[in-house]
Length: 123
Image 1 (spheres, rainbow, N blue to C red):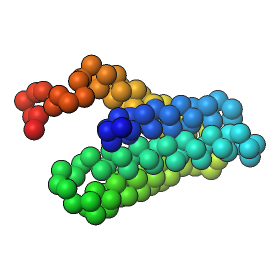
Image 2 (image 1 turned 135 degrees about the vertical axis):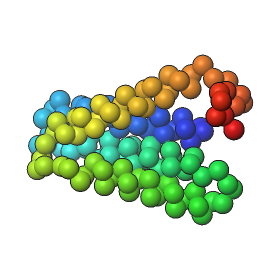
Image 3 (image 1 turned 90 degrees about the vertical axis):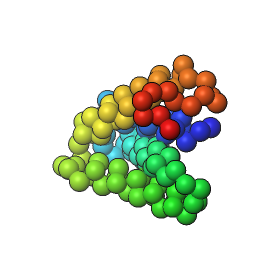
Image 4 (image 1 turned 60 degrees about the vertical axis):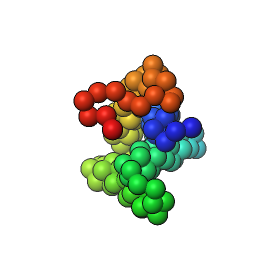
C-alpha cells in the first residue's frame, strides 16, 4: 500500500475510533480507553506515513527521522491544549482526522495507481 493511502486510511480509522470514544463518554471503562489508545496509534501511524512522503530522496534514514518527527508533532499538537479528561476534545480531533483521511481517500480513488498527479505544480 502506498504511504499516502496508508496515511489516509489510518487517519480515517483513528478519527472514527476517537469519535466513538467521545460518544461513549470516555472514563476509565476498558472499551473507551482501548478506543482512545488504538485511535491514537492509528493517528500517529498516519502522521508518520504522511511525513515519510515529504522526503523525496532515497535516503532511508532521512525518511525515518522525518516520519518520527511528524508523529511527535501530531502528538504534541493534540496533547498541548488538552484540559483534564475531556472526551469531546478527542472527538473534535477525531472528526478533523476522519474528515482529512476521508477526503484524501476520495481524492485518490479516481486516480490510476501508476499515473502521476496532474496540475501546474505536479512533479
